[in-house]
Length: 503
Image (cartoon, rainbow, N blue to C red; front, side, top):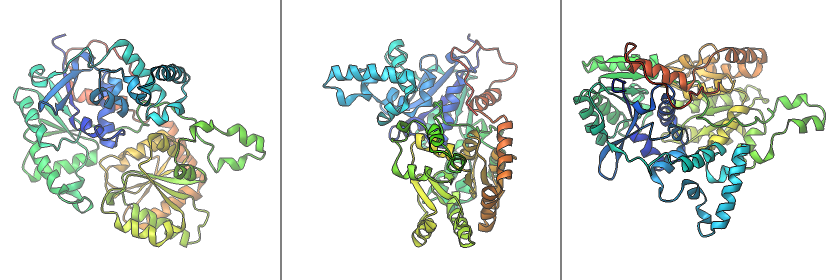
């Protein structure tokens, strides 16, 4: 249909990220999930991705009719599609070690086909994929959906007036600006999503020239942006203040993010929680509760140790604004007060810069007398296990644009200790315990209430189960409602199934 509203999502920064990594952080997950879910809401022939081609330094595009949108849910598959040699089939790329032994490679493919149909994810762990990934790879080979049949075209040759260009990623790289500006000049309506204004609002928590670079980008974005999107009402207020200060005016719409689990990964059987084991009086009763040990052996020793006793989980990049220093001090405060049966605190995330105070505290106290452990960059498998088995989440951040870990914890049925500031109340609602992030005693009191008052914690968990949490599908629907006018031409049904994220 020639009258359809056409949507273009730029994924240049996402692809640049997965050139060097096989995992998503918060921003990449937002981009990947919204592009993928949009295929169930809008005709795939009218949804495009654009990206910067490093070879000819021009932006190219593909439609979701030509590119299976499911690949966005897996960093491994997305990397394979864009960066691996397409002359060989994709399944062989994961069995490269057997390249000189074709019979053995064929045997493993046959085995993997069987394991994938049975959902045995542990068989795929060492190759960095899941059973679902393997099934998609094999289907991709059978149906030849990809580069082999479709060549990307110059984006500006495909775009036309009244198209929508949606920038969900971090678009700081100046090499992208000219394309965005040209798209706007030709009549495309350009939307820019602002995740937060942290480098401007609390610049002391960001390193080097980041505050200056961010401010420069935000001012530059005015040249190519018709409308802004923000991930929370709190971020919208910050953006309004900034635009007023620079005497600029743009329409701003709020696109609240999800309270959802990771991308399209099969749920894993939860380990029996440590406190639940006290209800099992006989050894044979405990054995009945044990999961498949094969799913455990791929976890690191540090993760297994964390899962072995009751613990509170803290997820996110280890950086100043996450306020982990005060969180650790809260544990010390409680232990020093005589609460020796306190659960452990497990900090799961990648270490950033400017965390010397936290390092000094942990070193001087022996990781708060052994109560605190740090898991560096855990895999999604490990992180899922941690969410499933933690007592609750702790996220006393000084500032957040949204707060994906809080939503992720809620999707696992777990409540949280959460800051009463910035966007976090928008995520936690009435399902979490709030604290003053600048008060160690306030953080400690909130932790102690969830640890000691089982009825209160259970009541919060009951609210979670009674609440319809925001899925990525709903976020994508809200995005479509923003960018596609209500009186626009009705679109053809999507060719891909609509998928609700499990909550």
